[in-house]
Length: 353
Image (cartoon, rainbow, N blue to C red; front, side):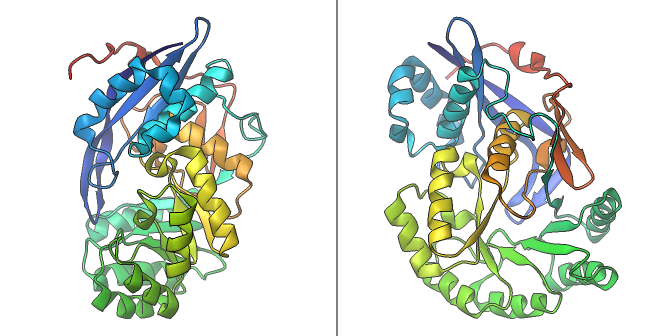
């Protein structure tokens, strides 16, 4: 088996804001596995200031992985400190074994018979920009809205959510919010009490990760169910998973294969979540359509209930054309549509380290 990789920069259609900053571009690294007949492709997509691995060292690490590909395929646990590479290698192998057609699971989803319900994601920005996004999602038929909060003042964000709730009941529209750790422990509980008046479905990561006792107290006292997101990053062993869930007792886990170390690690989290009676759903992490496609196919076969966070494929001007399509509030796979991987194949194999 021959392995190589290429770096590709994705350009956002418009600046996309979170409490950690604003994205205008993001880099992904694609790993290619060739067995003499087919080529499997996987995406390694770490996020700045969030992933445990260093973006500056991605190319040199991938060079090592490609040079010792048989070793790392046999012992992927050696890459535990590089979760996005684990995900890329895992999915490239699955793609290769299935003929290199970007169909890693055969299901009603890949046959185009069923879609996956997803939430409509509202990015941070000016109140006017956020209102525009909200209206667009509602007009498109979304019945679950996820709003990133924490960049504006709480009053402004509360009024935006209140406007949705005044127009739509909880039976009509599910409201999720994602704070990305924006609140302090001192302000979080009061904010959560206010948000509960709007019958919010859940809040992701209200305070920064690493404050387990404080997060446990919030989970105990909060009238809004709390989901863990950043808190899960960097944990891959069942023992550490158990310790975290025994301490915090979250209502939900938000799982991202690129950040947690691929499908195998996420399935460990699901196993532990079920054991400790926590709900869960799957979210993409700004991958291109290569990574999103793999995550969506895996997610469908999990038969998870509720809306997933898989709507980020439309964010880029130069994403790879794929069979993925959002129609209404569902992500669909259209098998009659072709992939266009030319932007990737036109790139030179990266050799500047």
